Structures are given as C-alpha cells and as structure tokens.
Image 1 (tube, rainbow, N blue to C red):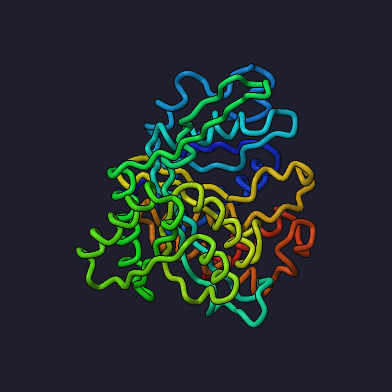
Image 2 (image 1 turned 90 degrees about the vertical axis):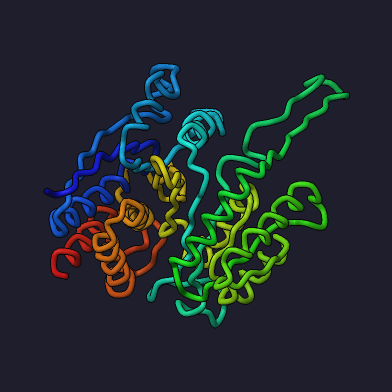
Length: 355
C-alpha cells in the first residue's frame, strides 16, 4: 500500500503563497510519478491573520502541527507588522516547540547560475551548513533594566547546553558520513573571544570526533570561515556551528550559490516533525506580480522528500531544477528569469513528467 504523508502548509506572507503554490504543484507531480500520496492541510497564519484577529498562532496550532509528517512554509514577515513579532511568534515558536534543533542549509552552485566569485564554478561550491537551531543567542534569555533612561542596561544571553551542542554535532557527523563526499567536518566558532560557549563546543566536537575516525575534522573562527567561503569555498564539505553564526554565514553562502531565490533550508527534528522553507523572506515588493523565483521553495520541497525518505522523488526534483536553471532561465533574480513564477513551476513539472 502506498505511503501517504500529511503535510501542514503555511503559505505565510508576501510572495510566500506564490512560491508554495509552485512547490506543491511539483510535489504532486513527483508523488504521482513515484507512487506515494500527499495530503495537504493549509493554515493561513501570518501577517494578515494577525492584523485581522490580533492572534499570531491559535492555541491549538502547535498541537496540530505536531500531528503532521512535515511542515511546508512559504515566508513570514509583513510590512505592516512590527519586525520580529511574527518571526518570533511563528518561526521560533514552531522551531522551539517541535524541537527542530538542526537548521540544514545546502549550498550548491548549479550550472547556468552566476556566482559573484571570480573563477569559481559548480565544482567549487558544494557544501552544507549544519546550524544549531534552538539555543544560543536566539533562545530569548536576557532582560532590560531602566529602559528608556540614560542608565539603561540590556543583556542578551547565549545559552549553550551540553545536550544541545552534542546532538547538533552528532547530527553533523552522521550527515557528513551519509553525504559521503569529502567526508570533512569543520567547526565554526570563536574560541579566542567566546571562551565559555565555544570551549564547550570545541571540547564536545573533538570528543565526538573520536567516534568517527573516517571523518576528517578541523576548526576555524567564524571570521576566517567568511573569508575562506569567498576565497576558497571548495575547502568546505560540511560546516557545523551555533545559532547566530549559522544565521550569518548561511546568508553569505546563499549569495555565492546564486542568491536567495534558489536557497532552501530545513528545520529538522530527526525524531519528530521537521519544517522546510525557502530562506529568502516574504519579498513584499514582488507580491502578486508572478515574477518571484519559486526554485528555493521547490528545492525546500526536495529537502522535505529527502527527509521523509522519498529519495527517488527528491532526485527527480533536483534533476529538473538543474535542467531548468541550465537551459531555460535567463537569471535567477525576480523579474529577470525570462519566465513568470508559474511558468518556472510548469517547466520543472514538465521535466519531471518526461524523465
């Protein structure tokens, strides 16, 4: 009997619904071809829902999401809602409640996509960042004293637990082994300044490394990682790091792989429900124009199938994305593709059907 997956869909704000529409179109095509089923349930949470109701997430939202097999997210962020309110109230709330402790960001330059790095090509840019996703500075620990006065004090604390650090590092080692490319794992930190947090990270990293003799390991400060990512991205295979550094270096990584329009990410709980999303944001200035690039969302759908164990379907999506980027699209930027959002989705669907 065919496996049927229940997918919770949060189209979200801005261009989120447009790119999610194309992602679902591709997913349905792959499911039909590979013989598995997908049930989609849509939730209209986001900026418009908040403005209409004053509620960010309904009381039963997290319990509802916990019952799904995966979550497919478009984008969160509304120009008429205070920055951070929706992101913290939806994205972080889901990540923390569902214990999605790994943010996985593949960084791969495809043929036909321009990179700002001189003399670098697809053979040079192919690595993955494993970012701890529930601790660090994003855990929300801290406070403010004497707010609005000349004596105001603001404290933001980075929370790093042995459990949280070790499980992220173990995931990175296991992923590096499964990826089976250069089999090299790099710890990104700042041990010379953040001497408490990254002492824990570094000790744990090298302790766990003893259980993976087939994996080559090294360490680099976050500033060096940024420099080498620009100068010699081919040095990297898998990078593991904390929440904030991961947030920063993956945006740099998105630029060298061609831009936000093709960068996808996964928020993973290996034993629970994971969430998949394009990382480019809601792009409100392009909303409703049918010119946004949907490939990041389609690649997020690919990551979802990989995580669900549908490797054949994931492979079909990536192969179609590669063909469309190489043969059909002028540029990856919004409005410069030579095709509409809908047409790009149709091209990918067509390649999958013909494969």
